[in-house]
Length: 195
Image (tube, rainbow, N blue to C red):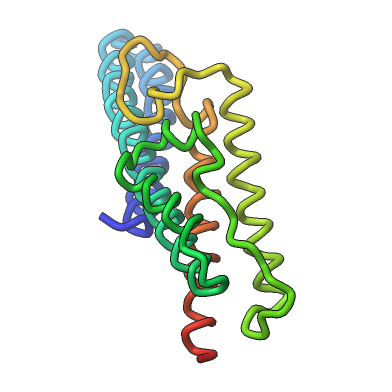
């Protein structure tokens, strides 16, 4: 499943989550009128819980796939634009782990490709958009850190975590990683076409 597939699946699950939440409210209203509030609300709550768990699992998958896209695209972009594969190699090493918690604990592993002024194939808007996308990743990591969330929460479903991982900052991180990967991939594409 690609990062783009994950976005679509997560969006559908998130929509179902909102619809299910409305069904809980509706079941309570109908139940009050018919005297079956407990049964209807319990059934709707079970459905909501299952959908929320599914949405959280898709969000974890999306973040992992977006990280994969970002680190590979950034490594290739860096190598193409500088000829220096050292930072690119660091990004590829991150693939060996492929866990979002690794990036959470060690954010420097996803370095922004440098923008050499003497490189004619790199235009200012492309460089600026990639830099902004990398800043969004850094900001999302900081926000997630402000929740004092154990990093492994972003990798596995844990029953002891009562708060949704969306609220813990993983949605922002998945979006930022996906955006950064897309911008780095665009940089690679424009570099390849410019040659």
